[in-house]
Length: 314
Image (cartoon, rainbow, N blue to C red; front, side, top):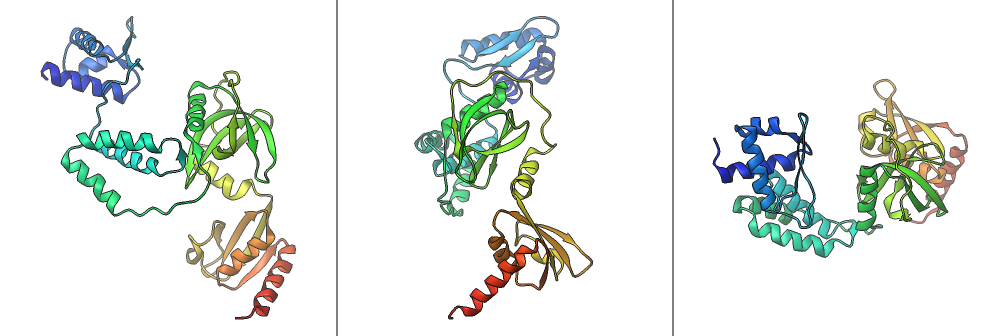
């Protein structure tokens, strides 16, 4: 059986790992009687940890939020993950948290065991980051969006669309998705009656939030995959299809389009976008013989591109 101090640390770790625990489950994990669990909970409360309890047969315990942040217990992998995350946040795409991240990182590294500090420093030393130079998101915006996702509260916000047009949106937020250097909100658009994605850096939240809502079934089992497919294909107005004279694996990773094998030495490339000229440049960049399947207007863009290249002075 664990001694009292070690048992308290183990109890705290369990309460931080899961939202709700029954008294019986905690007693079983700690190898003690439920009465001992109750005493240990009282000891944690006396140390400032806000442990909430629910009476009754189905009652249990939950670690809540208090007026001050009590010490957190992190295992080795969690500590490394937090340290790496803080270093990334210090020069990342979320504005307003750079200095705070550095202060938190300094506190964490001061207490990291040497073996973990070496791992974090090695990762930092041998990692090179290129500044993306793109738009950033205010940390408060991300915090408010995630809180609305958690509390199932409708969001009202001014949104700047793809063509720069402003519009008022009402959405039932489902989740935030990080893709490359950008953050996206996935939510149910209350006015359009469909699932939509919104770039977080184009969102200007209004206050207060809208009414609470009953969560809907998400647009797919994997929201990130659904959003990736939507950004790459569904949201663009023009589709172009090409027959490439080469196997699909030859072009994998060289285009954002969809590749489908056609026999052993040919494949079908499908691109979506809003600019036929840009599509012509993309397929020409692949350096392979091809045929345009649709749209026929794309052929003239390719001819114009060819004439421009032939007339250029080298």
